[in-house]
Image 1 (cartoon, rainbow, N blue to C red):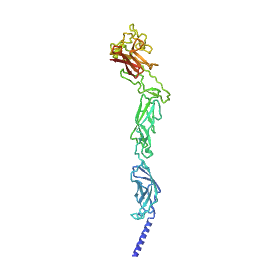
Image 2 (cartoon, rainbow, N blue to C red):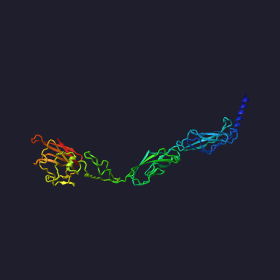
Image 3 (cartoon, rainbow, N blue to C red):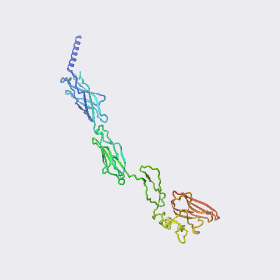
Image 4 (spheres, rainbow, N blue to C red):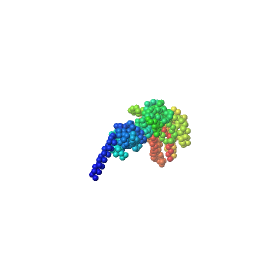
Length: 444
């Protein structure tokens, strides 16, 4: 038995020696490779090509290449042998390659021969080679604008080098497809142009009277000529040339009598054109035209006004046109049309006895039309319109109508019991502006 074991050991030893002699050389490959793969493709183009050589060729197994192995953590590539005899191999992607996630890969590769038997026993491996792979971008993404819309304001009559700039982005990884190479105005027949950097300029002087605002659509192209999926809206507002002074007010305002208060300048504003302002002083003067409509007009006769505004038919005219019988208005100032009396607080008209009663009855009407102007120095004084007083120096008013600051006041003292007993009463009306009055007082 001992002799058999020795022979067996001798046989195994000789077999190992023979195998070593058969597979004497290691495979040989280049020391470095440069590869390119297009994203979403699976084949790597290597330079130089992946080829392993073995000096044991043409000895079976020992001179053949059975494998290429990649050393690197979680590399998305695999190396396959295309031809064992020639040693040709190929690199392939095991999963989709995305340039936007990773642009480059570097790893180590080695070639393995087939050893001495079909099982690969006693195989030998080559030296380590460095493989560097670049991912080639595919034009997957279209340009997209940074803003949902753009807006700019220009002044009429100017040519601008740049009204505003639009900007688009592209998510592709390569300079060819991620850069924006061109912008284009889609809207036709507009006085604007755009350059490759997205700067919009006007090609002619704009006019505020012609167009207050322009709306134009703009698109973008990457360097692969892929167009933006959505165009962007650009609004250009045209402002008139700045003129200092009061803006947004009307010189003429139509007012319907009896319609209540009317704002004269609801949106007026002072345009300074960005200049310094130390003080502001404004004067407003109102004038009414002589037009024949409504009761606040001066082209009608007194009787026509009474009829137009609803006065009583039996009214007594206290300020009649001067005549031989109505001479108490002689010497009073008149307006330019000789239709309206003017009072400055220094003169008045004394109505003769018998024209109006001394005491008013239980039912009476006072009707008047009056323009009231400023009264310098008399702001705290009464401005009497109509009064009936004692003839003595007691200066006691039986009745009186007057303006006191912003109030219209009517004073009435009546003899109720016919026993010379007077009970005074005052009626006050607060007015926003005491300038023009068309007033009817009815007391019962």
